[in-house]
Length: 392
Image 1 (cartoon, rainbow, N blue to C red):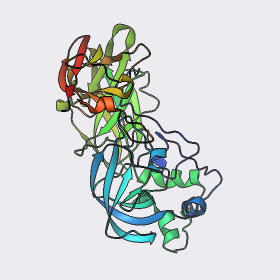
Image 2: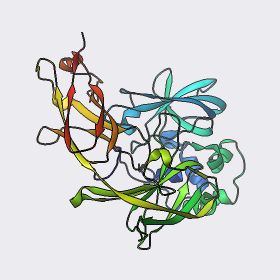
Image 3: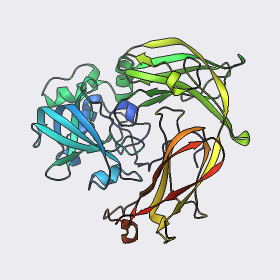
Image 4: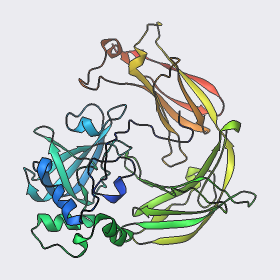
């Protein structure tokens, strides 16, 4: 069980490094770049086993979240407990290979450890995609897809242009030179309400995002220092909420706070990050709050048994930041559902069906029932009963 606020999804793991620098954190891709120049890396995404990739530049117009299986090769890379994935509508601006014209639909994972690529609506990308069927394409962070402004070596190769001196640098030197201009940095200090330093806490910046898509999160990988100082690098341009937290499991407490020193999401002040920014004076405080353990029980009106091995329970906070709580839970070894260290607040709790991964089918016994969905206010250790209702 996670012991801090988390979003739990199945994590796809392969071996190697990905082409896009910020994507090697959540999912590791099967491509080694050691000793290669950026020109070599760009070429590797267009040759060999990738020679059948559909390649184009495009503008993201809309994005939607869908559920269910999406077919090969997508299922190899994008697996979540509910089959959640993105359906991205992209207007093709320039095609380099394959049948790509007008507006195309590109499917990808949610980007929560499932290798999904995090597109931004209204932004242009160089897309490397596989065909799923006559309508849908598929991409992941392992394909080479990247924002146009970060795709210089690949674009020059695809356009038949001569490489620049930067294109001939090895991968490590290339990113050390150009990456600081793509992102921002935010540094500062966190204290407790009594003024003492807040050390060894998780310091995160969560993107403020209007769409129902997972926000980007940037963190200080070294936690806050003994004097409370922190520094978060490689933050994608946008608006963010800055938070700090640390759990004290033995006491069922956690320290928490939002910049500029408040305890509520609604009172937090967003921080705007621009490419190349280096913010250095972000100071705020944290306070202690109680956290709780909750168990879940699934019931039917007439007591009919249901195949619990195919049922999951999710609990979601209405907030979307690093202090919020989001959990998707299967039964544990004792046949029960439970979640721990839940902060006080208002939650949406629901059951969901896990279809067979290969066929996408739902057990016949479960097709008889509507899934349970209810709101809950959590302010103590408790049990929540989720009642299924007949489908007909």
